[in-house]
Amino acid sequence: MALDVQQVILWLIYLFGSITFILGLKRLSHPETARTGNLMAAVGMSVAILGTIFLYKDTNGEKLHNHIWIFGGIIIGALVGTLTARRVKMTAMPQMVSLFNGMGGACAAIISIVEYQKYDFTDSNITAVTLAALLIGGVSFSGSMVAFGKLNGNVSDKVFPGQSVFNMIVLLIAIALGVYLVVYPMQNIVMLTLMITMCLLYGVLFVLPIGGADMPVVISLLNSFTGIAAACGGFIYHNQVMLTGGILVGSAGTILTILMCRAMNRSLLNVIIGNFGGNSTAATQAGSEKGNIKEISISDAAILLSYSKKILIVPGYGLAVAQAQHIIHELEMLLEERGVEVKYAIHPVAGRMPGHMNVLLAEADVSYDRLLEMEDANAEFGTTDAVIVIGANDVVNPAAKNDKSSPIYGMPILEVENAQNVIVMKRSMNAGYAGIENQLFYEPKTRMLFGDAKASLQKLVSEVKAN
Image (cartoon, rainbow, N blue to C red; front, side):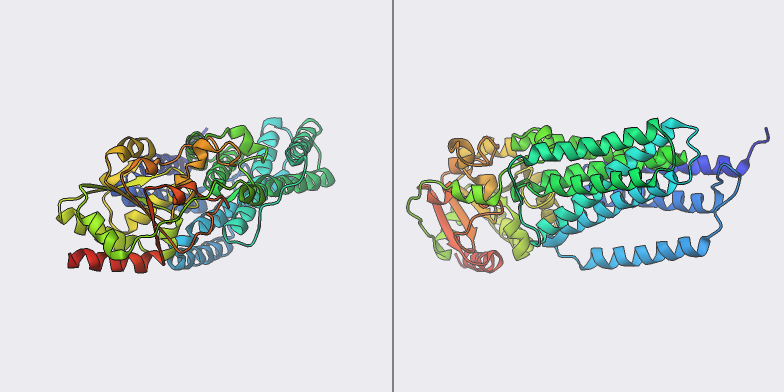
C-alpha cells in the first residue's frame, strides 16, 4: 500500500492542533498567560480546519470540493462571532456563552442527523456514537437556549409537581429510542424524529426549574455536554483533533461542574434530574427575621476605609451591571498607597457564569495575586477591618448557614459577617437573583450604602483623596 503523503501531512496537522489545544488549556489556568493560551489554541484550530478542507479524503478517496460554501460559511460565522463578541457588555457575557455553547450543541446534533442518514449500518459502534452525539448535542442546544432566555430575563423558573420524575421519563425514552435504532439498524426517520423531539424536550425541561443563583453550574454542565458531543463527532469522522478538543472541553467542563457543585453543596444528580436549587416563589417565602437597617454616608465610609489596615472587597453581578470594575481598582490602588492591605474575595459561583468575577476584574487589570478563593477569604475575614460588598447577594447571605427553610441552606458562603465592619453597596433592598432576602443587611456590623455602584465608588474615591 503506497504511502499517502497528503494524509501523513494531515495527521501531523491534527497532532499539531491537539498539542496546541492541550498547551492552550494549560495556559488558560492563569490570567497572565490566558490570552496567549487562547491564541495558541485558535492557531491550532485554524490550521486543522484548513488542513481538513484541502487534504481530507473520505472513504472513497474523494476530497472536499464545495469550497465556496465552506469558506462562505466560515466568513459569515467569523464576522457574526467577532461583532457579537466585541459589542457584548460584560453583564451579557453569560448569555453570549450560553448562546455560543448552544450553537456548538446544535452543530453536533445536525452532524449526527446527516451522518445517520448516510450510514449503511455495518458498524454498530459508529451508529451508537452518532446517536449519542445527537442525544447530548440536542440536550445541550435546547438547554442552552433556555439558559440564555433565563439569563436574559425572557424566561422565568417553571416548576410543576412531579417534574423530576417526568424529566427522567423523557430522558429514558430518548435513550431507549437511541438503543432501539442501534439494535435495529435501519433508516427509521419516524423513530429518529421522535428521538430528536425527546432530546430537545428534555433539554428544556431540565433547565426550566433551575433557580437563578445556580445558573453558573448549569452553564458549566451544558458546556461539558457540548464538548462530549464534539468528541463523538471526532469518532464519527476519525478526526483526531476534533476528538481531542471535544475531550478537553468535556472533561474540563465536567470537572468544573463538580467543583462548583461542591462549592454550592449540591449533588450533580440534582442537576441532571432538573431539581437543582429553588424557584423564585419558594425563595421569596423563605425570608429571614428582619431587624434594623443602618446606612452609612460616603464621608463616613471613606474615613473607615482610610484608617483600616486590611480590607476585603467582595464583587458580585451588581459590579458588572454598573461597569465599576475600573473605579474599584482605582480605589484599591489609592488605599494601597495609604498602607491599607486590599484583597478581593471571590465566591466560585459569583456572577452568572463560571469565573465571571475573575474575568471582570482582569478586564480592569486587577492583579491575580489579590484574588482570594472562598476558603482563603473566609480564613481572613476575622482579621479584616472592613469588607466592601459590591452587588453580591446570595453568596454572602448568612441564611445559608442558619436558616433551614432557605433554598440556599447548606451552601458555603463568604462569611463576611465575621469582619469588624461590613459595607454593602446596593441600589435598593431588593432580593438577589435567587429571590432570597439577605440576613446580612440586618446584622449589627453591616452598613448599607445605597445607590449606583459606579457613582458611589467615584464619590468614595474623591472623598478618600480629600482626607
